[in-house]
Image 1 (tube, rainbow, N blue to C red):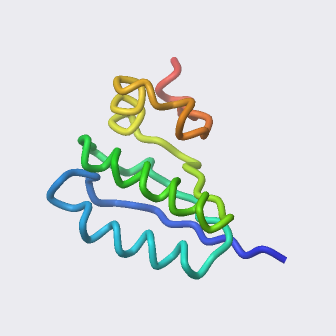
Image 2 (cartoon, helix red, strand yellow; image 1 turned 60 degrees about the vertical axis):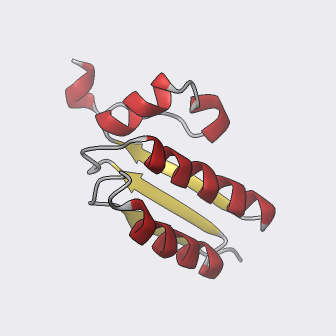
Image 3 (cartoon, rainbow, N blue to C red; image 1 turned 120 degrees about the vertical axis):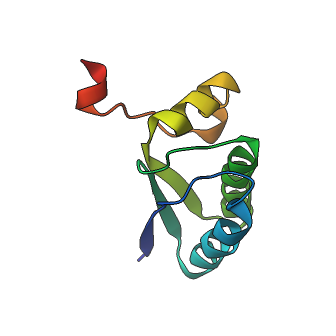
Length: 101
């Protein structure tokens, strides 16, 4: 039986916040078989935030676990698209209905 934990990040994924977020995400990964990230409320993301997501994916893979992004804000999608990392991160980029109109 696998256990899954969902984390909703409210703070920006920028150089100013990633150190705090890093420990929280890695601690959660240590306690769960799967971590689901809800990034729908992230207003800003830079390459430090992107590096954190890549780190989490890599650490999950090394431990035989999963880290899945289940919701993306526009800022998160923009950085992932700009860096052409959607395939690497492996999570479907879900576009909320209000943005697709």
